[in-house]
Image (cartoon, rainbow, N blue to C red; front, side, top):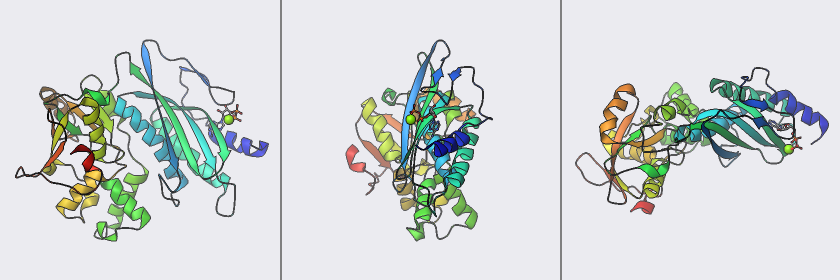
Length: 328
Ligand code: ADP
Ligand code: MG
């Protein structure tokens, strides 16, 4: 890319306030970054790409794009029980135009990126910059203990299925951002609508929860595509089934305009919540529940395959969207 633009990137992505990590040997500016991992550790890697118009609406502000791009990667580390360390950033930016100024966009983007990175003591150690339709890729790396890693394949019959927080706010936020399904949010106050948009744009990666589950959870993942689809990954990988008690689902306040069954469906199939779903032995659950009143037990792992959604009267609830058929 032309020298002046390269200088621009350098200016925005060399943050003097970045944490000085003792395990970083060489950061941005050379052909590669070099890290010196702590001894007796394994490294966990993940990468996610966000494409404008696909993974976020075209009108999303730059700071929200930065925040989300890093947060979804942090969420993958959280789901593995890993401790964040370093990340790299690949940016594809449209040519500068009347609507799109690199200076303004990069300023907002980099401020938000570094603010979140500092909260997790992470360093940006390199990247790449090209021209094209707006897209952001972050690769993240974090530490695991030698035996660590909360895999999807460890769920066992009798385990309790737990969520780290409420579901459905981000799906309402998407309705609001796209100005669709007006009835889903018509009854919400201005501040409730803002909370739903914030849930969509500024997801909170459950790093501390993931670390605390390291030696106790049997299986875990983060919910990006909706609970049904994502819990299905645990069930398939672990070769088990599950029963969920719908009345126990922790529903976000943003679902207040929906009747109960529609709220369940939004919570079960809406994406982008980034809470963790994990399974734990029945005898270990009371200790965790006491330490984490924000966690909710929603069901159990069963030997019988498939996912059954039960109402309070024990009747099975069939939902009509969100890929339920995969698990019948
Ligand atoms: P190369 O031609 O060797 O790939 P680049 O010109 O792409 O080098 O990048 C030069 C340096 O700037 C490298 O250290 C690279 O990691 C860093 N860099 C480029 N773009 C970004 C970015 N968007 N974020 C962080 N670092 C970047
Ligand atoms: Mg390059």
